[in-house]
Image 1 (spheres, rainbow, N blue to C red):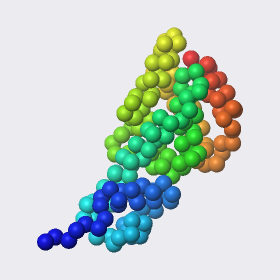
Image 2 (tube, rainbow, N blue to C red; image 1 turned 90 degrees about the vertical axis):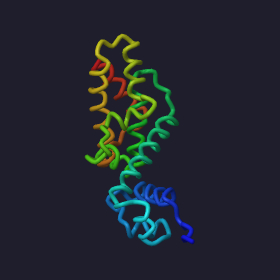
Image 3 (cartoon, one colour; image 1 turned 45 degrees about the horizontal axis):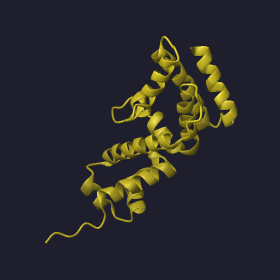
Length: 181
């Protein structure tokens, strides 16, 4: 009779996600994950072929986490792209390690930054449609300009060079929208 599994793939993935969230993806090693999951490395490699596969799973979890973060972020601004920008910048502030893995890494499981940001609910498309309904002639082009501005601000958060409060950030995003429109 085979031995009963003591730790599941779901538990290993959850431990890996917690680890990356706290310490960063570069700290995710088999030994450290085993310690975090409370097991040896054997159960890890029983359910995953290698650590790259674990990272792939963690990125998928991070994507779902970001989607939930965005869904729960207050949508108080009427100007298109401002709520998206505020949520993205806030995610960089509150979840720096997940942000780095998702939005500052070349390895994103074949997904583009746009796909990660858009999510399953079409967050970006909703904003593009809002801009279009306001009469914007090139809402996709406007998104690209806003995205460069928003992503730059979030990167400044990561490097410690962004010190604007929410009121100033809203002002900057609204000004950028008006200037780019």
